[in-house]
Image (cartoon, rainbow, N blue to C red; front, side):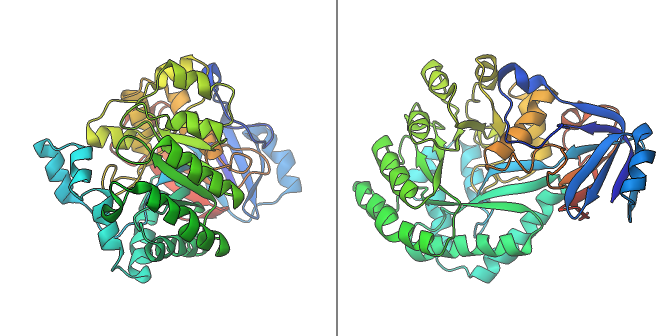
Length: 415
């Protein structure tokens, strides 16, 4: 496939290598004007300026040509934090939030994650799979090319395995690149309230061995925060996960200064996510670590919470990734174009920083930056072609509408 006459080819790299952008580097966004891209066998095999094309065409003839005159080409978004396999929506709790109930108050009375967990017990794998495929088709249309999906609405061995088996099936059926995360420690079941260390035992001794035996997860996660799991609980689970080769990805500091960021860095977590409560101590711990700070704008926006200090983090020299947190309770949207706009509007990130946060850095947060997140020879051909737009900044600026005309995943036109 040849995509030619591209107005701007955005986020290009000379060579594919595992990389993230941090601090002032997040302003770097390499662009080629009047460009082309060659794709062969789902891989990017060439790109450059149109005046370089005739010589290359002799070497690599194209079976399919797409004229992108007036349009831009971007690498697909990488959504490194979602819960998109879930049993049903929770708009009743949405009404409770409008009436003034907090996230913690809803959770204490058996709502929130516990509500989804109850419904997870009875729904079939077939229903879960069908609904998830529909959601995934929607996020593809908005430009997502890779997604991490967590369990965590099961909270029993059987239900957690049900979720993870559905995610495994999605990997087989969907054109998206998918990573699976075991999140048995998403909430404390009602019967374990006041004795949560016993539930941690269940996660470690009953769930984790079965998850590992069936090879159902790429990562392990813990909700380390006030009212959920303590630092001690988190470290026990992360340590157990490491013994099975599962690296951590931690829910941290959404509700308070929980110590979750420090625990994540201590155990070399791939990412720590949410981060509304991030101060100087947390920033210092993250500097020079291998852990990606990942902000979830949709959840803070939907819940009316404080926003993570993205500007302060970047100015201190940290990298930042952004993801959707697509879930039925606190962020019922997987639209990464909207997340891109929120990064700029709510977090005062410049468009270049926001694009890095939703492509290259979020690919790092899925351990995929060597194959996704930018346009480079040898990387997977997950791209989207915009409609005719006047500038790169127009993508986050013109929020609320889909600016994408064509989606290419694994070198094939999907939409």
